[in-house]
Length: 131
Image (cartoon, rainbow, N blue to C red; front, side, top):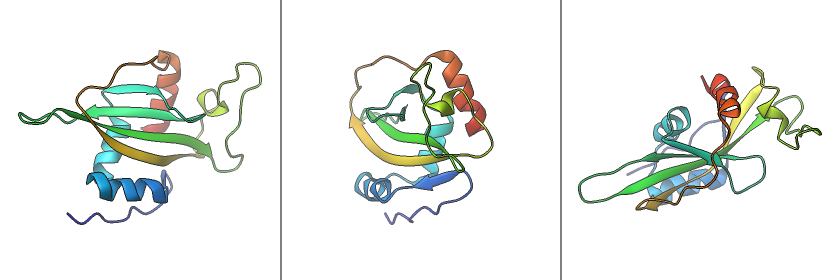
């Protein structure tokens, strides 16, 4: 399977790391975009100011999840922090100037353990940017 290198556009920016992982795990650009838009589960990413989203891709023979880690970046100001809440500023000040930077993607065999989910009001703000 030949994976085409994704191009940066007005909404998405792709790291070289995610491209290497796309080749390694045979994950297409369209699948990553679909997982970001319609995740089965959303959690706070391991890295600071990141979001990890997951979608199950089960078949009769194989049970697995595909995870994507990304962050939101404002073109004009970069990644900022809100001093009162210590949360990333993009959660509280979303605008049309934000871009999704896809950092990495991976396949997880089986079912991963659940961690603390992102609060619902923050997820609504993220969904407003994505759609």
